[in-house]
Image (cartoon, rainbow, N blue to C red; front, top):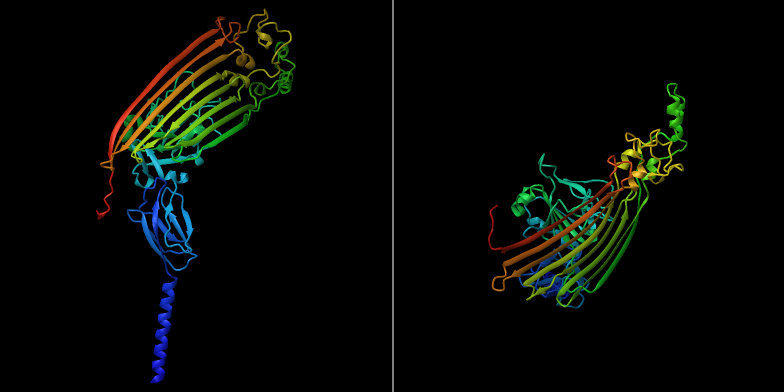
Amino acid sequence: MKSSHLKMVCTWCVLLASIVFAQAQTIEVRGTVFDTQKEPVPGASILIKGTGTGTITDADGKYAIKVSDSKAVLVFSFVGYTPQEFIVGNRKVIDVELKDDAVLLKDVVVIGYGSVKKKDLTGSITSVTEKDLQKGEISPDRMILGKVAGVQVTPNGGAPGSGSRIRIRGGASLTASNDPLMIIDGIPVDNAGVAGSPSVLSTINPNDIESMNILKDASATAIYGSRASNGVIIITTKKAAYGQKMKVDFSTQFSLSSIAKKLELLSGDEIRDVVNNNPKSTNELKGLLGKQNTDWQDQIYQTAFGTDNNLSLTGAVKNIPYRVSLGYLNENGILRTGNIERITGALNLNPRFFDNHLKIDASVKGSRINNRFANTDAIQTAVSFDPTQPVKADDFDKYDGYFTWLMPDGNLKTQALTNPMLLLNTYDNTSNVSRVIATAQIDYKMHFLPELRANLNVGYDYSKGKGKVYIPEWAPQMASRNGQSQEYGSNKTNKLFEFYLNYAKEFTGIKSFF
């Protein structure tokens, strides 16, 4: 009897000791989670690393969690912020400041009336961020080549600065335009471009682009109207973050481009063998053969050199984040005489006032492009012109020495093909294009009703292009013998004024049956 009582007392002592020991090892940690603006972050996740145990912050950003070991690691995370880890140690209070995570910005998509999370979208929208865009492109339209399902990007040619044909889920019209609507920092731009510019987007520096959002389905028309019937591409340029330290970025890029494949044609020797060994060839025909082996494709094409240089300065002065950028591009064409030179500059200011109730996003972008367009007629002529003839002939005292087919009397043989190099070097088509895009978006969150926002969006897009085509009167391709001197140009102005009120409030107490 005494033995059984003794066993029971020992058992209770062991249980009591284990409970006391467990309580001694349990540590309760409390604290507050807030952002860089010192605002609480409700719904932030706190997880004990390596376990499934965790909790979330309340409406005031406060939390409480129990850990069984002072060596435990707490992981603090929230969508759009960089996760942080802390060892508990002897601390019972851990306050955490979460910082914005630029990588997770892709979870937020810019649309016509603000920005929303992807999970809240009902339309078909694809967001391509800076890290996913094609690198090394000089035109923004080619930066999404192969990056978005249902979007076809077909380059219009290999000339420097040439644009691309973009089709979102195919074409919808046989006669009207099938081009998508382009939005640059909130302002719609004219797809037709301006005179002297090979592409509407060639005036934008790709290095200034932060993201491109593609609205694919008919829901885009609810925002932009019938203009968006072929889809919308929203381009957002880079901005500085609040409180960011000054940062200087410089990049330079050099490129060499060449034709991927030439047509396989007979050489000069092979042409002479065919003509001389053909019993039907006349002496007159044989007398037209030259003594050269000229590859006209090698003559008109070149290994094109290009350079792209970009400098940006990003930072913040008190509550005014800023980003200033300069860019210089110079690229030759694979077809000789083609060239593009582009100088760009941009300024973005994003101040915040009144405890972040008033947000202003203002930007100014300017560009200057100098183009020289090569004569593409030389491409067709190069595959047909006689390879037995030289580029220049010693006995030619006209046509700048270039070999040209002549009649027996010395006059020009007008029915014959023109020397491809003569087509290139007598064709002078140059243009100068200037463009300025200025935008300002003012968003005010009402102090007396924070769920209500007033948004004002204004923009101004001015572009001017002019050019000149000159062909000398002695050029053999000019049948009129009068040469050509033609000037062209156009100016375009696009203004934007938008204002809307937005009310958004989440009622957590309402439960849905669906």
